Length: 446
Ligand SMILES: [Zn+2]
Image (cartoon, rainbow, N blue to C red; front, side, top):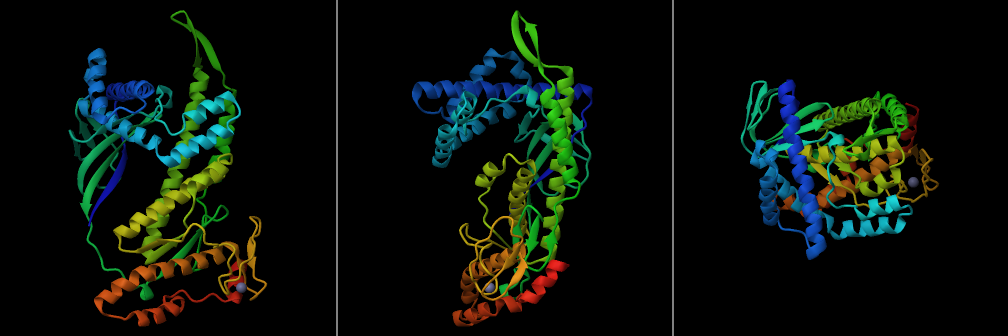
């Protein structure tokens, strides 16, 4: 099986290379902004977006007017046409249009209205974001601990792991005062045969805010340590940043508001904490999913409506971080499951995994604050997330079996009738004992 894998490394450019990087990143950003402007005007005039080849022609036009663009390699500049075409296309998708309409209706202040009107459309990039990128589809080399990119030259980097596979593309990214590069490689993975579902150790996973995830085999995954400490710090530094005012200056007889030195310093502080939080999260997610891939043979996750969750939780920083993590956690488990021949399924969005009793199927209304599940019918008393994870497992297993049945039947190893019998005893046979209430309450105390 051919897969794509991306590796990321930190670059260590010297002063000279750094200024070249900034120039090239700036050129790419300048061209992007020019193209966005062109595309907006084109849309106003023709009531449609320019095609990719029209944008490519516009790039040649912009290049002829701005000599400084000639120092950049043509490929990192050309890619902007492709990206903008895609971004324009995405902005007129029905779901985006609907979301935009909703936001416009909700907007109260003029500022909110402008923001709502621009929702989903390609944005101008600002220099002050310090998030420039330079993309190379070709014309780069990777040697021991340095890379070569056309028109920039050799740049050393810290090689913390080996790169496996054939490098396809390379992107240089700015993150404040640090620079990184990502290289996407194609590699061949040997496919291993999957275990039979009834022999496989499959877990259901319920994600939450209190504990990061609860598995149907009694395992709880705690939120990454140190995260709260950094979140508190972030809040404090952001408050300070909001107090640092913009200063008015005369530039070419025009009054403009610019950041004071103190504000720039404070901005960098905030950015560093953001980066730290991101690193903690990424590290935690990769380690956790790797560990789970080693331990289990399959995973059932709840289908989350991340987009809605992000909107609801956007005021709460902690919650926001969780949302992003859950999404990434599911994404990693899904592709790693594919890489390492594990089962993976998601339950449907509307299944009542929290309300349902995992023992008798009775439905009980649960509030967010209820931490334990108490069933009035069978007396089941267990942790709320634990109960949900078992429901997720059961639903996922029946889903996997419907797909699995056809495969097994085709091989002639089993008949459908046999399979139905197996399915009924499945929870007992795959190492996941049926949970009895007494065990569940013991789990609460432990
Ligand atoms: Zn019950």
